[in-house]
Length: 252
Image (tube, rainbow, N blue to C red; front, side, top):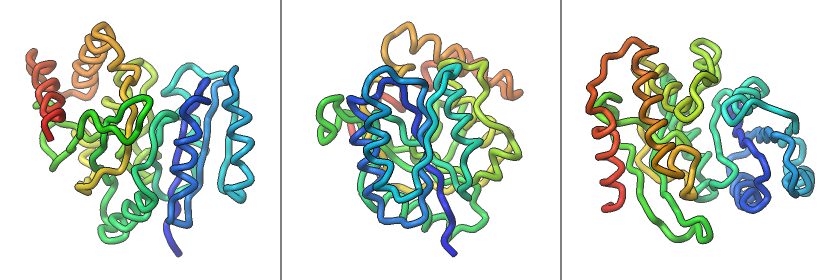
């Protein structure tokens, strides 16, 4: 029997972009997908949109709408709801790059049964035109986080048993909980990673951490705190190391 994958989308007043996200999941060729939407009591037409698409998933879409303590709390709720062998995230303003993305990810897990996680590349695209590529994030082969490397989180697919063993997002991190989670799993717990060198996600520019310089600074501070939390020494030049790979993304 084919492995099941759970895809999780967190929404809050996401009606402007959510249709693209849902359509990209609905179009996937892989048959054994569980889709979970965790809504934070949206006040726009997000819930109407979810209800519109619910019948098209034929029982494979589950959703809740309730108060939460922010993005990462909502993601944790989705992770706890998930029944899949593998868990992935698709943000409410992003989309899977093409209809065979999930089939390709699951094929990597099938070819590498000892793998704990698969990661890949992504495109940053324009807010109003997802066909216009602004940056190309090539995650590349694994090396140390302290030199600025880390996987593109929206392409990070992890076996559910890994989260059960090592925990979910740490809600003490507001801007860099995704970074801390990957750091914990990869550098502290040494999970087995497989790099799949293809673009899996089109990510609209303008995430919470990258919206302005203040948030970028707060994100860097939280990243350094994540190293300390996980007992990993890091240079005071880390923000510079973190910046350099991002600059390269404009020239691919």
